[in-house]
Image (cartoon, rainbow, N blue to C red; front, side, top):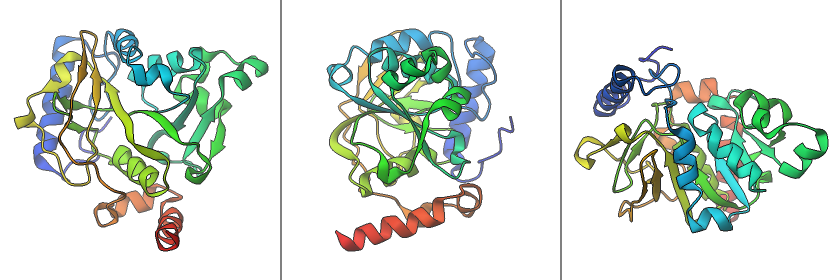
Length: 256
């Protein structure tokens, strides 16, 4: 995959991502390609296990999880724990943004959770939903390339996670106390000095690696909604529903 696909938006983050991707490949802990991806890694299942020890996970009825391979164990564990999973269509390239995975419905249809937890499986077998149709989200998992112990994060550069979280906040689908979390390899945890956080970036409350569970006690302020002025022309071009959704979100602002 082209490492430069989203390069140029923030040079410091570009450099950090390159170092993380290269380090994963050099060490051999990557599973599959790392460049320009939310990289899969050896120990992703152990990280998912640690994430599931959080009290907020145990209480959650609904989980929003990114669609990438390293979080397959998170989605699988959520389904086996009886939770409704909301997963975005990879890179938001379909006319609908999300699918809903209901574990009871999957069981009745005879669809194995192991299939439904993959991106191909949930797009095929999940129920398409618009943002407005989603339930309140009890627990959020996002994909990351690099993280810091105080809650900093960066993804692969496409801006999808921050856009989704901003929309959830604008539509009232995300409580202030809802945890934003991730699973990464321990080598993806970097010093806060190396990870630039911008005003539209959402911070992490918890990070699970194959070695440990980190509660960040983050002091970063969370965005109130979508920073529409930061949405790039290519995002409007490549995300089919984004222009119409912006009109609906702004209409919702006016009503409120």
